[in-house]
Amino acid sequence: MSAHHPGLPIRIELLDRKRHDRVGFSCGVSALDAYLQRQAAQDMEKRAAVVYVAVMESPAIAGYYTLSQFSIELVRLPETVAKKLARYPVVSATLLGRLAVSSVWKGQRLGETLLFDALRRSLAQSAHIASAGVVVDAKDKQAAAFYQRYGFSSILDADHRLFLPMMAIQQMF
Image (cartoon, rainbow, N blue to C red; front, top):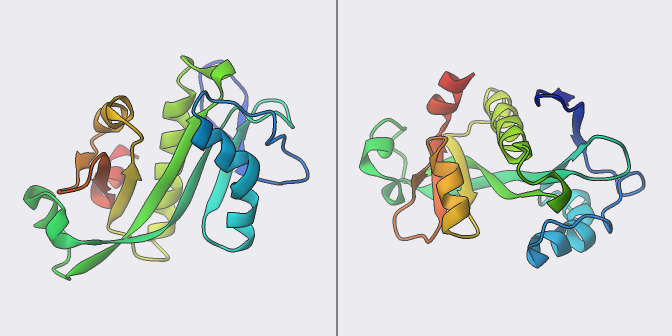
């Protein structure tokens, strides 16, 4: 699948441990680098997460994100969000677990491209497996501010965990 990115021919595809250079990836956050280098392929094999990578020229990875199933207690969502969802104690969601951009590609809006690709995939999947929205764990205040610019709101009693309702994602596209 090709993603729209001004001036760059980006492909976003499933991580392939034989084809993509995981070791050469560096985003400046050691935990995110280590995940891609050591854990991501195993998570895919064990069906713990699906890892998508952005490539311009294979095998170099320009960025990546992970998606998996998640559930969240309705009472932890802001009331303005919760009142629009089904009144079950726990609702299903899609977890955007990690999102990282290689230091080489910082400042070129690749993070936004990856986010929109993840949201598009989450929306498409929600037609087949119910998902009330997308949950993201921002690594810090700066990352939380990035997600909030796209409509994510904070989850109660959770540092840097945010939620975007699927209805809002549907309106984006």
